[in-house]
Length: 172
Image (tube, rainbow, N blue to C red):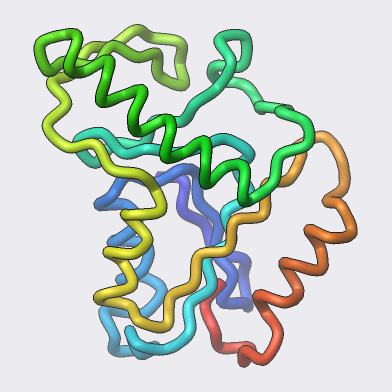
């Protein structure tokens, strides 16, 4: 429901998608491979500051309790820090599940407390690696930016580098 296209460009936007949502977005932008090759370059820019983990295909992000459902202004966050935090977040979730008879309690974006049987816990990094099997030209570029300020110059350079050398027909 949060998938949008900038009119006239192959530039798309979405909220944090489910696993099925990621697949649906990629199939939509390629037209199931009929309007754009599935093995062609596809650039995904992830501007989130927090680590993401998928539990049963649903995204869960690590946020401070006072930032649930709000923009998370987390400060000096880097791609490398998020990668480390994401691996640790998987371990934390797996520990919580193990200590709760296979169930995970969490708070969703609407601040509603939920409990689910956690059958599958996977990091965003591992999800992306799986996506690349079907979309070999796919690149995932994590550029954690602050919501309330302009991107850092280095972040803007990273974004430009991700786009460099691609054609105007490349989905972003």
